[in-house]
Length: 312
Image (cartoon, rainbow, N blue to C red; front, side, top):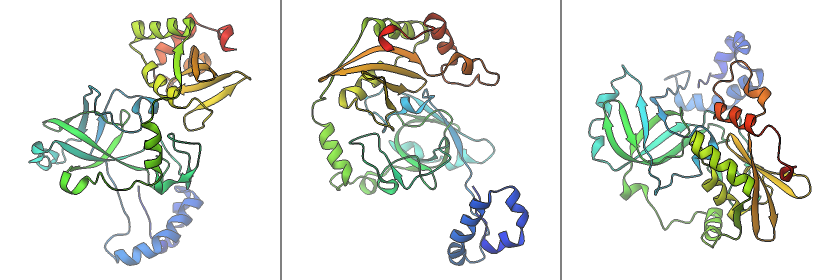
């Protein structure tokens, strides 16, 4: 991530070939006052990752909105070699938690108004949310520090997908970092609603139960608990929660690399079928080997090549 001074861009018009004209204009306009504050110390601002985190979460659906303190989970932050990071980790072992400063690397754009996944379908200013769609998509997460092995930090539950670049880590200091009595704006209202018992009862039809069992036993894939948690709270159509309509009676929710088809009657939600998230023509394309659960989806489509009648 590099920002150029206004006058530097003017002297280097060839940058337009490497950076879009729109982005260059933004840098020229926005960095002018910043450059005055910085003086002549630097003509650019650069962030370099210190390492990558390794988790079992391949898609955003698996990550949740905040780390679950009750989850039995081990994640690894691998710091890059030949940077003296081993020395930088000295004295960190005495801390129970650390802050991770990281990059939403799967979000190339930002929005001034966003639709949070929790609460009513109401757009809010991005700076009043933890949305990944930010001008500079930086994330921060406090995680438990379970151990340090050379350049590897063993961490507890986190909300980062596998391969997320980490820019910095800082010790979590309870006396300075925790203010539990502080007002949290609209989030206080949403949390109060979430403390109420779930309104909807979620069940799986026979076909969906068979598919879920097949995924668990053959591929160790089980998104049903997370699916049930979301639908029990609010199964209404919602763009951020990836819930859409399918015909007059059915709805579909995206579950990472998978989908679930369900119907709502009163306060009962019935999941009638599970589906692969990608069509076979996409999964079999060259250079698509990194699609999450690709082999499992291909096997699933071979076993269930068509949508069941209940899901039409």
